[in-house]
Length: 197
Image 1: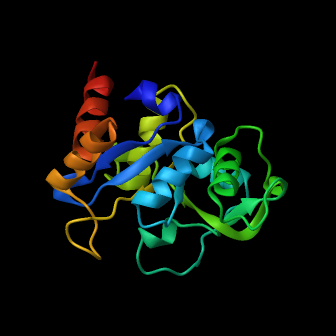
Image 2: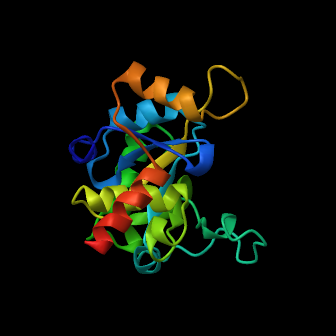
Image 3: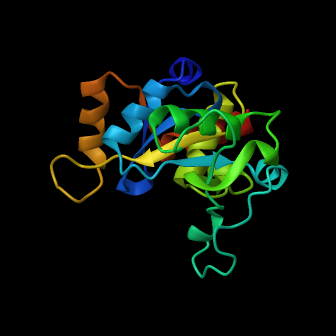
């Protein structure tokens, strides 16, 4: 799985306790092809998990400062790359923006606001503190030896139109496309084991 992430290929991550799952691609190795695949098979709402320090460094404030929902309150203003893109919405444009968000040398001036990519502030402590999609995406990238930033989007169901994929359907999706798969629960257990070792 970690080899897949380093190569810029998507992996399937099932949500905790049977919740919907996501496609995850490490930000610094994302490609136009991996973003195109992600958009084709997900809701198309492409988020990028970012540690709080990166959100602060890139001047990414909350999308709405007074959210009553802590989960939604972690989404920041949307962004596009400031240079090298056209409309910002194409797979190539979004891939460039995602790589910039994951880059250690990126500055706030390298991004324009608003845009077509949605950064999400990761909870301190990752999945061990909050078993969410953003935390799993960030922790997976870090476990692969990459910067703790990754694009993610919810996989849509082909069995139940208008719904998101979960459980057995996610497993079938991963097998059909030859993708590595894990779950938030398995990742949490793995990281707890590493921490205890």
